[in-house]
Length: 324
Image (cartoon, rainbow, N blue to C red; front, side):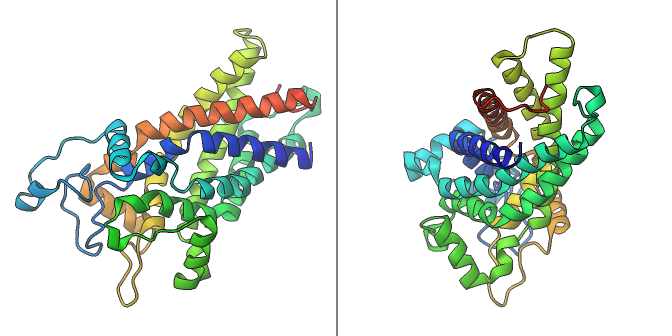
């Protein structure tokens, strides 16, 4: 497949990323709920799902006060009411760049590794263990390439939840990256990169490997013929697997990338483990699954659009692929 694998994987990922961007933004906002953004170095005693601004009157008067659970629909509605309809696409330029860098790399490398490692004597199929290994390697490399755009995307998506005086107000992904380098140094572009790599390895291995595995199972058992129905079914199942596997790492990644580091003050989190421990201690272990509903709501359609677009491209150009 060569270069075409990278190009087609990148195009399919950009289409999928832009189509599901509002759901990704809502997911990020939900993952940041419960963080004390006003005083990041003071232990957080607020209920797990409290908003950071607005109606928090009762949380200051009583630590035991329970604030109603805020779901993705409520977050989306409040976001539109406070920031306007266009806010649903905050950071979309960073999403495009992230997909171009991250997904193009991981999709292309995954297909290259599959073709290289497949057994021609078994019809070009690949054992599940090798699919997972290919996904882990491709995802890790893709994440390192795309981390700067990932940091910019998280910050641009989260900016509207901050008080006006604390907002970064990045104009675009280029402005975000430029200002990060100027204000925080080049290394800030790879903040949270270990988490990004871990998440990407989990997502790529679980998403791509499980898609191939589900598709082969459906075709092998004769449940469906190779076509749109098979592609949609296999891709949605793969999206669910990827969401379950990656959500805890995604929550920690979002918080580490979004934290503000001020001169002369220690950062809110010293690293991924510190962030995980503080999150669990302040908000409970299920905080690691914050934003799961919008995650699966996004991951499902994203994976469907990704693979359906890719499969159609493969059919259109008559490319022989290992996806049998």
